Each structure stands twice: as structure tokens, then as C-alpha cells.
Image (cartoon, rainbow, N blue to C red; front, side, top):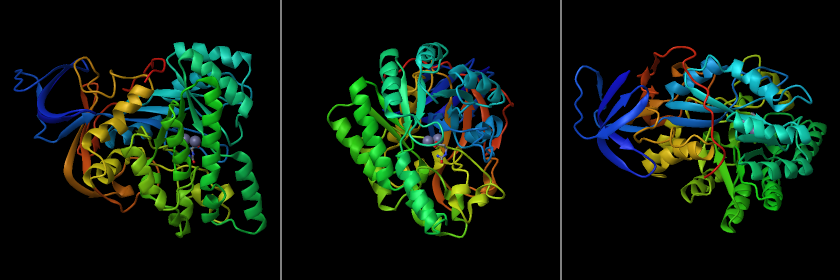
Length: 455
Ligand code: URP
Ligand code: ZN
Ligand code: ZN
């Protein structure tokens, strides 16, 4: 399989330059001006941007949350991802049965993910800590799973003692601890209080998980991992309150990384007051508008390293609407895997908040580096996988569910106009999306064995 790309405006996290690219057997073999190779498929990129394929390190495909199963499985989810310019996902495995070991979920997920159309990996999920789990972490890392998620809320929340033991182990073994930070007691207390006052409309979902709920948990994790010398990665950062804790920790030299998501950058809590406000229920909730510019500042200043989606889609009809009159009955999570790249390009690059190189850093290079895939993924260089996306920076589109491939009956970003959109997606040298049409094969994605953590 050979492919020649002509006249590409190549963008990496550091450089922007015009060149041609020659790809063979899925890998970039040459990058040079005026490459001419007869009798192979040749595509003229016409000066549009060619960026490393997007890497979304936070999805939940085919997840069963007890009250509902997600609308997207690994086939529909990765197909949608590809149409939106993403060529690799790292999925957060869901909880398994109580007491199960780590490989129980890994083996299940190998099977769930087999129809993926782009490359994929998983984060381990920690439900409890004992000696067996701590030992098994080494096996998981050998199996190519160096990152693990611990929850501070939900059914399998970890105690501070468990977080200490887990982070000590990960710090020593080259693992990365990713954390869902919310103060569980605060959530439970506020939920009960709001319910007793009859305050169960969608806006009270946000009120039951205020900024301080995230801030306290982030700060606690920062202090806990300072005792164990473990790098910490905060997922789905949503508030300035929590960002301020991260800034202080980083400024005093602690290894803390963070990820935010498009919903926290472009949506605000007034959405919960709309008639279909239940569509926006996710945890942490979308916030008061003033947080958005603070998060953009955190991105610009390097306190936030990645932008992922936390794609966890449930249909509005019959699923999200179960919570219309009682937010506690709504399955938590939003779709977004297909719209991340265009929204961040448009809100970030087209609106002048970030450079196109920073866009690449946030959506591809940093995710690859933090999660053990660089430079095979997240880069445009000789020897790297030819995971590439063409972005037309002048293409203007209004996001609408009708144009998207996500298997869900709404998008949280309906009606948002974007300038700049992916027009071609190449995965390991194969053109799998052209002008919003998927042309690849079901099951062509491969499991990526990731390396131990270093950044
Ligand atoms: O509401 C959300 N974010 N659902 C997905 C699970 C999680 O907490 O990441
Ligand atoms: Zn989470
Ligand atoms: Zn999540």
C-alpha cells in the first residue's frame, strides 16, 4: 500500500511547512518537497493543513452504567471519531462485577473493541485495592496498559488510603494515575438536600456538583500524590476553581497534568434551564460561563495539556429524558467524539485563541506522549504511523446531528457554527474518510500496546 500526498501544509506541535509525504505500508517513509513517484495513488492536498490524526484519550464506548447502555459501541463510535478527524482513541473501561480483577475488564474490552475502525487502547479501571490488584498492575503495564482511572465518586469510588496505595504503586512502576475528581459526600449531601426541597430539574444537577466539589477533590489528589511521588492526570477538568489548584501545584514543581473537554469550553450551565436541559447532564457538569475563558487561559499557559471528549452517549429519547423531572434518574454523559477536532480548531485556531501548532499539541501530540504512544502516534515524521488528517481552515459548517455519524439522536453542540473542518482522514496510510463519507472497513482498527509513562 503506497500513497503520495502532494502540496500539504504540514503542521506539527512545533512547525508549519509545505511539503509532500510518501507513505508505504502504513508508515511515513519520506517527507520532502517535489516528491514524484509514478504509478501510485497520489492526492493533491492543495495547501490545506495536514495534521497528525486526532487522539481522543477519553471515550466510553459500549458502556453499561446500570440504568442504560451507551448508544455508541466501538464500531459506531470509532467511525464517528474518524469522520471528525480522530485516528486513535483510548477508552475508559467501565466497571466490572464487584471484586473482579483488572484482566476481567481488559479481556471483555478486547472483545467489545474488535469492530473498531481506527486504532485503540484502554485505560485500566481500579474498583478496589488489595495486594492482588497492586501486583496485577505490573502485568497490565506489560500488556500495554500503563494508565489507570480511579474514581472519587460513583459506586466504586476509592478511599484516600486506596488512592495512596494505588499512586505509590503507579509511581514506582511507570504507570499514570488518571482521576475523576469529585467530592462524593458533597454530592450526596447536596443531592439529598435539593431533593428534599423538590429541586430536581436539570439545573439542580449542576447545583449538586458545584465548582468546589471538583476543586476540593483535585486539591486532595494533588496532596495525596505529593506523598507518593506519582504523576497525576486530572480528567475532564471543568472549573477555574480546580484549575487554580493545578496551577499552584505545577508552579511549585509537582507533576500534575490535566485534560479538559469541548463541552467545558463552549457550553455553560444555562443549557440546563432549556426545555431539553437534561441532554447536557454530565459529571462534572457544564459550568457558569466565566469558567470558559479561564480554561482557555489554562490551555494557553500550558497548565492544561490535552483536550479529550469524555464521549459517553445516551439517546435523548427514552434514555436522557428519564431524568427530565428528576436529574438523578438521567444517565450521565454527553456525545462529542466527532465534533472535538472541528470545535477546538474553530474556537481555538480560527478565533485566534491558540496557534495551529498548539491545536496539534492538545489534540494529538500531548495525548500520544502522556499515554505512551509517541512518536508512532501524534507526530508527522519518518517512521511514524501515517495517521493524518486534512483540515480545510476555510470550510464553514453549522454542527447538526443530521450530518454526524455518532449513533445518538442529538448533539450537545447543535447549531454551533465552526470555521475549519476535517475533509480527509488517513489511518495507517489508508484514506478512510473523504468529505464526511466513511470508506474504511469494519474491524480495521488495531489494539495499541502502549509504553510505560514518561513525559
Ligand atoms: O458524565 C460523565 N462524564 N460520564 C462518563 C463517566 C465519567 O465520569 O467520566
Ligand atoms: Zn469521569
Ligand atoms: Zn469519562
